[in-house]
Length: 142
Image (cartoon, rainbow, N blue to C red):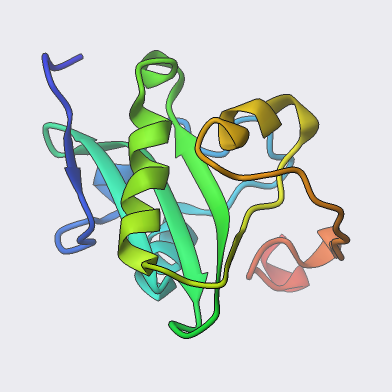
C-alpha cells in the first residue's frame, strides 16, 4: 500500500487493468471489467481513489443537474477501508453535484450510520431488482 492515496474525478486513463482487484465483493454476478469501465464513464459524476495507477475505491452519481442525484455505488477495497477513503469519495461526489434538492442513496442498514455521519438521513424507499438482468450479458453469453 502506498503512503498516500490520490483522489480524482476524472476517468481519463482508467481501464480494465487499473480496476482489477476485488471490487463488488459478495455480489453473486459482479460486473465484468468492461462493464465496470463503462459504468464509470457513463456516470454523470465519479470520484476515484488511486494507489499509484490502481483504483482502490470509487463512487459514482447519476444526476439530472437540476433537482436530483443518486449515488448507486461506493466501493473501497478491504485494505483501504476504515481510513476515510469512502467518506472522502462521497464528499467529492457531493461537491460535484452541488446544491441539489435531493441526493439519494439506497443502502443496507449496516452502512446507514456511515451515510448518516455524512449528513444523509434514514428514509423509506422501494427498489426493483431483476437479478436475471444484473449483467449486460445476454443469456447466450452464459
